[in-house]
Image 1 (cartoon, rainbow, N blue to C red):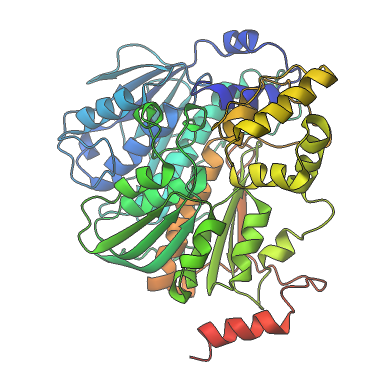
Image 2 (cartoon, one colour):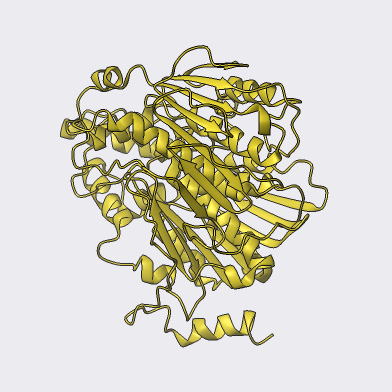
Length: 524
């Protein structure tokens, strides 16, 4: 496996023909991108946050991006960067890229050395390419423009800065992919033509709404984050970029970092892969330096941790997991506020805020029974490779490792059926094994998407904003659903709206669970 595997697999899915990846790589060559930090605003904390995040994202997008020229002055860092910190901005960029060790050819320079195919500019520096995207951020506002510079404001707000990074990098990808539109027939790849302003506070696409300053210290109270992947990790990274945090943050995640996921794990690098570091512990290290924040890292599946959680652990919960069953298990504990996020291969990102009884719940979104893709997949795996459905469901749901006796059963069934697959190794996790099959493991009734990398990251950034708003700007919290896209046409008229409980939901209308919710969070 390699860092580019998931991006290549996504491009093959989007392409008209799923052929050998080498012609696809050749088609996208040379993929030269420059990201430029204007010296005039290089000392602004918001500019440094935006620039750092854009470099982070672009370096992970090979083979869309094949050559990355980072233009950064030796300006002192004036804000908190959770990992790969250095004394100056250019040193920070080198540390990030060295630790990530991407397949992208990269260089960090003081001035542009050659003309790129596409450029991303933070500030008012001149456009270095015909296809240039300017990005900026003022507080909660994220801006991108293909026609001229946009402003970068004072102060520190990583939510607005990182959302601007996602917007800008999405626009760069669109401009590189649009040149090969015939290859991606039917895929909505629509670059913006005019300046775009997106408020991560109101989700409006204008400057008309409020844009309040963040508090100097953000108290998370007691936040439980279940799932530290693309979205959950981006949420953690965004919170860790705030100047000061306090409270208790519990991180629940059983998996280790693998290189195939580095295309969307903005909080991890190649060194984490080599040392097989657990995701929960990698994310916990982002928060080093916050003396008033307690981090509880649980490198286990949620259901193995649930018995040790107290009522306050369910006051504020983020369900950043890929399993529908895990989401439903979390809902059974009736959290006071439950957040969720999602993303698709066409670049859509989705976020939810759920209040039991007034908004749709996890059982509304993911009703159990027929049509459950995890169970459907487990059934097909059982039929194809032996083992029982319950065993495969645990593998799919919890990314459970294979035991030696299970490998023996799979090997015998594969040999008897003439199935050409790479057998799992004892101790190997399900996801790692599945990605090695390279199309050999064919489950015709299951069509799992590989999200466009920036989309789950954007969802995680916005959820970090929702956590902050929950405590400090309660009148601005999400009610209860928002979606948009980074690959198609950004929907300027989309607004958050409430998705009410389904009339036939057996959970939302259950008197026992509603009474439990009121007893925990309302009556007292």
